[in-house]
Length: 125
Image (cartoon, rainbow, N blue to C red; front, side, top):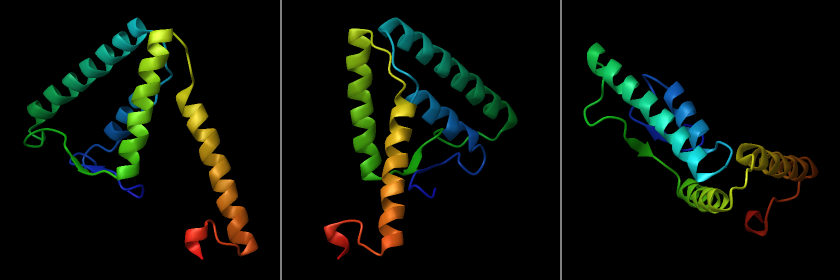
């Protein structure tokens, strides 16, 4: 929620968002590998849905996004394009490691700017 993302199951089963994002940001690979991983993921989701229905806790209409930042939609579009290109070329990339390294660099830049008292960008002046 701190990042601006929220769905209808976050209060009841927040681990499902972690599973969802782990699936989205998994390493790239061949088309066959992507199909296999997606099939496994959606089979797991189906079992969760059935169990929720048995327990009477399934939200009407299922899991729906309540809040999603525009910047996140852009990142997801880029990830989708990269995933498709890598699958076509059968290239394996550790997406989460690449994203994490850039996030750490950006965070370090922000911290250095904060410590020096300098604005992070011209817009902050």
